[in-house]
Amino acid sequence: MGKRYYCDYCDRSFQDNMHNRKKHLNGVQHHRAKKAWFDHFRDSSAILCDEQTKKPCRKFLQKGICDFGPNCRFSHMSEEDLFRLKRQVEDERQLREDSVDRLMPERSVEDWLSRREMKKTALSTKEDLKTEEDGEEGRAESDVPEQLLSIPDLPPSLLPPPPGGWKVKVNTEWG
Ligand SMILES: [Zn+2]
Ligand SMILES: [Zn+2]
Image 1 (tube, rainbow, N blue to C red):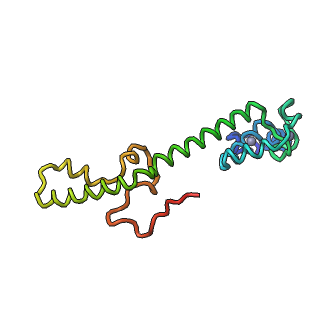
Image 2: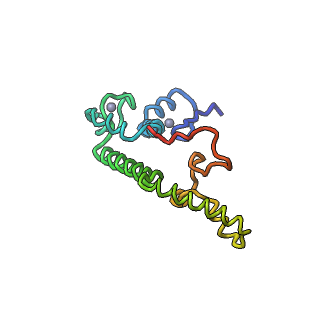
Image 3: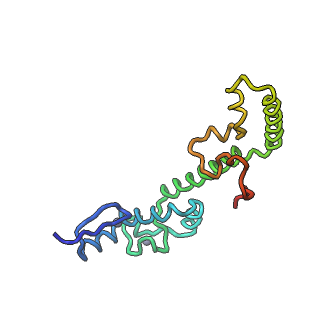
């Protein structure tokens, strides 16, 4: 039994010899897998820009194989691929705008702050009264906007600050 060549991009292995390796590394499937892997680190709108400035690669689109592979200066994307990519860009933009709207509701920040202030005063007066409604108080303690708490698996940066607050000022200005 000889050595096996394992391709991370394609998640498959085969007997390692010149012929097999060359055949695999030049295959369409391998190029697709490799490109998909790298593309997933790129912004899809950047990819779209890129692909739209290239002329279509006739060879690739007709025969499904091109010697230049991912380094080809022509686009290996069919019209359908481009269409799908455009839609993806659109979707991602929409998603970003939605989440910005949801996570930073500019109009209601003051609103929220004043409600927070009210809760605080309500809490401190309640403490004097030696509370009977434990449930009420537990709820009042969380002053994170409800929109935030309804999102599952929040990244740590969006979780409520620890008691006493963060040491550093949290920078919310993105990009
Ligand atoms: Zn491969
Ligand atoms: Zn090509």
